Image (cartoon, rainbow, N blue to C red):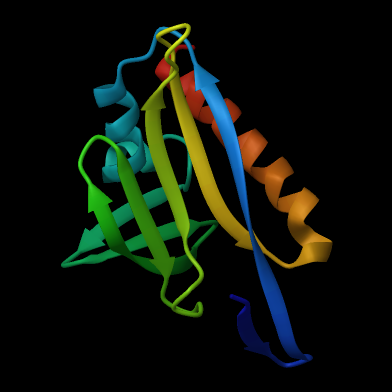
Length: 137
């Protein structure tokens, strides 16, 4: 199923992609708090995060973006949807245990235009490096 987002240049398709990061020596609870709470998210994802009702307000350099949680399975998965995006476009954090090592993995699902996918992955790599730093990994 394709996802289309109208823009000034016409209609652009966003493709879904998944990336996974391994966290050694991190508790699932600590990682979960960094993915779902304002103090946790503002430590690595945005400059500031506020929750008003069901809306998360993310701030970067005085620019605000609103998102809402559209799916939540505590300690396992949270899916956010930007206020200005198509209903089928979201970003999701999913935590699971790696059976062989007992380590914790974070799977991120996001969407990007094909020409911007590598930039989006690079941005996630940078952000997750900051997340690992804040978690002491």
